[in-house]
Length: 239
Image (cartoon, rainbow, N blue to C red):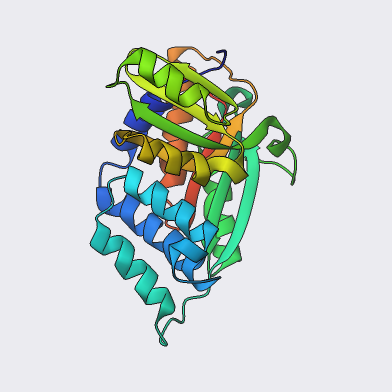
């Protein structure tokens, strides 16, 4: 089936960028807190929370950390109040970038994002300037550690959008509202080697740059992800 899979490469890059795993877990804890506080603290009754839990598990966040973040949101002393905000813009050579944040101070976050972009040959755009280039999809990436014929038979029997089988990974795309159902089916079928498992934004098309351009964009993404308020950075760079 057709498609474009760079997810294991991106994950390895992201692993290098987010070398301190505690930074990743802090961001996930904030997402868990917000999802739990906005609804039921039981993931079984809160689809938004369940999706963040699945994402955290794929990042190997310890179970105790996940439970602690959810319990914090359910406690009487839960006082943090975060607002979701998205910034759109461009990186070096016109690479499209979307930046999702959770913040308790929009002015502070906007200042950090704007200065980070401008210092690294990027710029902020208006709302909608690049978001039309991305589609929200469920993304499940498995290690390719399974019998290929079985994988084909199992996964093609599910209601997926697309699938790619490569040497190191199996990439599955789903509709956002079918992500949890398909993830549950994969679990029942015995698949457990997840590299990624989340609902995310996937670009319609990718842009290839030379080594120098790629390095400049990755340096910008690293700097953006290092901002405490930034949760996710989406881009259309072909890595």
